[in-house]
Amino acid sequence: MDDPFNHEWTEKALDAIKAGTLHRRLIVHGGKVLAARVDGDCPRCEHPLRPFSLPLIGVLSEGGVLGRKASLAGSTYRIDVQCGCKHTHPRAPRDVTGCGIWFQVELKVGRDD
Ligand SMILES: [Zn+2]
Ligand SMILES: [Zn+2]
Figure 1 (cartoon, helix red, strand yellow):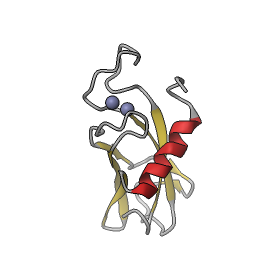
Figure 2 (cartoon, protein in one colour):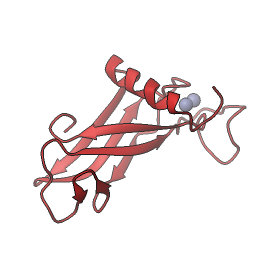
Figure 3 (cartoon, helix red, strand yellow):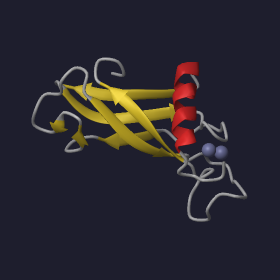
Figure 4 (cartoon, helix red, strand yellow):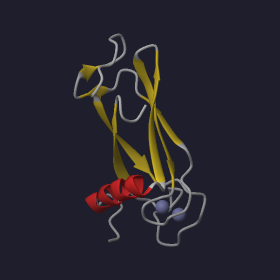
């Protein structure tokens, strides 16, 4: 339970997305995926996450390298998100904000944009 990289957090994050307490969104403009954004509540400590946004240009996806090509409907992206809530957690590693967990969020063109 105390492993910040435990796959359990990814499963919990998916539950939170289904429950509507965590939100994922792809920013698409001009047929290209520009960024992924995740906000909502941390699946572990349930504090609000600092809105997390990751530029996706040039990131490898299942469809290949993006950037110049128009993105294809159905392309999926997996991004790693760390809890960045503003609360202090006594048991979190010292050099991180939030409770320190990492989880993976999958985003899909056509579903999350
Ligand atoms: Zn947290
Ligand atoms: Zn927290």
